[in-house]
Image (spheres, rainbow, N blue to C red):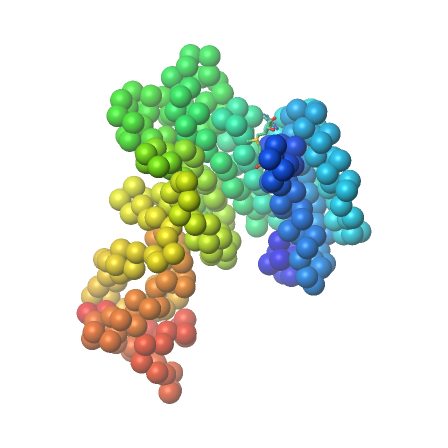
Length: 333
Ligand SMILES: C[S@@+](CC[C@H](N)C(=O)[O-])C[C@H]1O[C@@H](n2cnc3c(N)ncnc32)[C@H](O)[C@@H]1O
C-alpha cells in the first residue's frame, strides 16, 4: 500500500474475500482488521484513497466485523465496504465496476482465504491478475483439498477452483507426496499462466505433513521482493515449519540463518563460466530461488575473495567485495 500510494496511483484496493469476523475467539485480530489497522497506523498517513472490500458469506460474522470496523476512526481517504451474506465471487462481480478507473481495475491486492476450495473460482483470480498492478495471495488449504479431492459431489467445485479438469490426474496419485506435488504444481502452473511471478510457501506440522500452501502471484518484481521480505521474517521456529515450496527440488526452510550453501550452489549452477550484470544476478535470486536480494551479495563477496569471479567494468574506487552497482558486469570462472 505504501509503495503504490506513493507512486502514480491515487486509489488502491485491498480485498479480503473470505474475511471472517475480524477477531479470533481467543481475541487475536483477524485478517481484515490486521490489514485495516496496519494502513491506519502508518505514519506519515497514506495519502491515496484506500478502498477496503471485505466479504464474508455468514451474516453474523459480517455483522461482528462491521462493529469492529465501526469502532475505528476512518480518515476521509479510507473507505471500507463490508459485504455480508454474499459470496466472494458474487460480491466481486457486483462491485467490480465501482473499482474501475479508466476502464481498469484499480491496483488491487486480493487475499483469498477460504476454508477449503469452494467459493474461490480460478476465473476470479485470473480476472484480477489480468489487470495492471494487481496481485493475489491465496491460502491453498491443502489438507482439506486433499481429503475431499476424490469426492464425487465436489467435481464441479474443484473444476472451478483449479480452472481446469487436470486435477483429476492427481487423484490417481496414490503416494501422499506425489499427490501433494501434483495438486500444488497444477495450481502453480495455473497462476503462472496469468502472472509473471508466482511463488508458493508451505507450512507443515511437526510430522512434516503439509498443512497449507500460500500462493503469491504478481506482475511486479518489487511486489515479489516485498513478499519475500515478509515471508523470511515470519518463521520463528514454533509449532510449524515454514518454507518456500515453489520448486520441489529446492525447498528452502525459512530460518534465521538461511542456507547460504544452497543459494551458492544455485547461483554457480546458473552463472558458472558466464558474464552477468549484478542486476541479472539479483533478478535470478529473486525470481528463481527461495532467497532474498539481501542474501546473495555476501556470497558474491566470498566467491570473489576465493578468486572465482572478477569485476569486468568496476566503477572507479570500487572496493573488493562490494556489488552495489546494478550495471557492473562480473565474470564467473
Ligand atoms: C478461513 S476463514 C477466514 C479467516 C480470515 N481470513 C482471518 O484470517 O481472520 C473463511 C471465512 O470465509 C467465509 N466464507 C465461506 N465461504 C465463503 C464465500 N464463498 N465467500 C465469502 N466468504 C465465505 C466463512 O464463513 C469464514 O468466515
